[in-house]
Length: 218
Length: 200
Image (cartoon, rainbow over all chains, first blue to last red; front, side):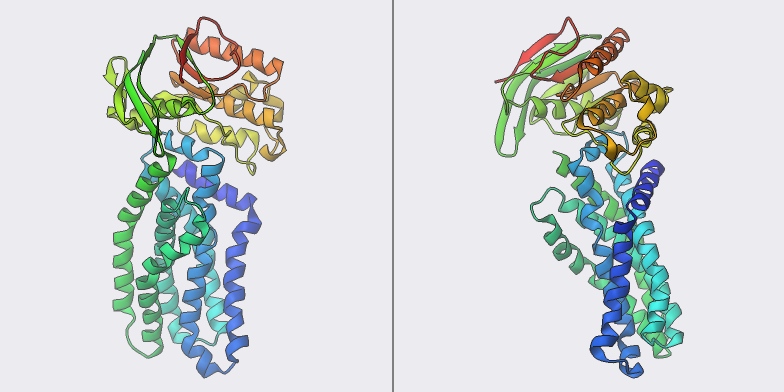
């Protein structure tokens, strides 16, 4: 499993442009909001958590259709399935690689972006604390979606339609945590709910993705 | 030994074969012949456990092979149509990755590459390889493990005559160790004493 993870990371380093694309999309898309809405701190600061979250969500979707697609096309998926590992372990390794290559950079870029969007400084720790389980959830749900649409015609179009509805609870509680902190309330209940969702997704998503992978190989 | 009894498989909605029975003894080889679309590749995928057989049973040494799919997967070395070569990795890295799956394999990637004359290309990125060299890299995956069942789909596609001879040596050595080869092909393979199964 660690071998799969290391190989994925090595491949994302070799294809650095693809890996950076998601991060650059995140920064660029979020930078468009001050241009469109105007730089007034009270408006911008009010909607900043929503901007960061929505942009992170969309950016995390970008690398998903190649996550298993490349392996299906070049035959590596067959070899992975014959490696003697449970399919859920393959899916979990892929999700971990997606988080390390996409989720973690997004998390790191979120703080400077939030400052740029004039987010109240007391809300930034809550935003980041929400994004940590949030990006992990996006990787797990995204991996499941990518495995399910694998082999489907126009899977790249289908993928957001499948994954985005699943991620709405993550978005709602993630933004609510940052909003609560900005309003002087405790972000704790929202963060706990996010963590609870993560605890549920961690075993369930790899199982679902693993079953989908086996189906795609047939 | 490998034994199949009454195998049947669907590809999508279409029944590609049914009632297929054969046996390959230890050290034996079976060549699957038949026109395009006759189910050679599907049969190989069924034997590998990648596709489900709709009917019939697959026996390994007299026991149901698919009773433990993970154990069966460790028995199998499958070379499909595609080479499963990652262009971003070097030749040796491509091979080393698959070595992690093979427990108890003592062959180093470099030794495995030498079997097919790729040793001097080991540190080259795989995107620089020609189609035939990629095929040789895929075939050298056979040499890193000690899987007893080799399932080969058109293994000699794009190989030159030198590589073909080297591949013949690999096949013979595998069979001498008691390994089994099942191959789908249209051209004669560099090995002797093979059984033939004709699909229609």
